[in-house]
Length: 297
Image (tube, rainbow, N blue to C red; front, side, top):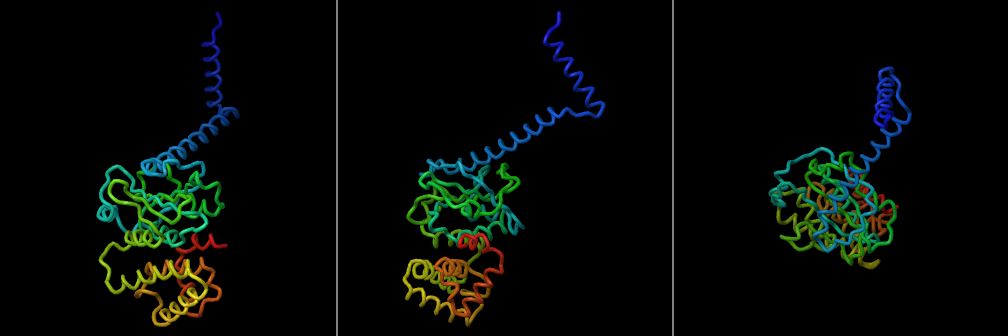
């Protein structure tokens, strides 16, 4: 009696004979391609679920993760995980994830520059989400942390997570550990926290105080002030940059990052005085401001 098993064995025999003769069934090729595509999508879904796992223990549990287009890249690692252990505490088996909420109408440009610097120092898994409180965002905001990382599905390959959530919040805020610290509020304070991951050593008191003063001046007078306040800040910047190439020391500092971003974001760059123009160009030439400045076009 003819059975389905005999039919299946016959088909297998023909398949083996085709492979022995160097022939490949087009239908089989299409099936293999479809399987590869399914596996790729499964890896992406796995990465998305793991990225959300960190945020579901926070008040952002209603996160709309239907738009997760990219992952950040990592370049030369200048320091090891041991530095992060001393700065953020040990958390065996878990990726340290910095979760930042920001409103898309007020992109925190300085944090994007600091993200680029963090990627140079650590292996950073970078992700952008859109919260359900925001109907939609412009495409550049979805790619503001750079292109998708080729190993985004393997979180164990990374030292630090950087999750940016576009959300309807009154001010930028960052959450790291719900159990051990309260949210950090305000772009300036979040920037100070991130910059601390880049320069963990002790800071000279006078330079640190000067840098903090410039950060506050930029955020409160350049970003939120009127025309007269912005003009006064630009004059002060021009005078300071006439004495030194950078605002708070012999090299780029947090003051330069925040002030440069605020000058650009306030629309003051085209009319800025000569020393400020030269300094803005110097910042841009460093290569870490590109993603932030792209949002201004």
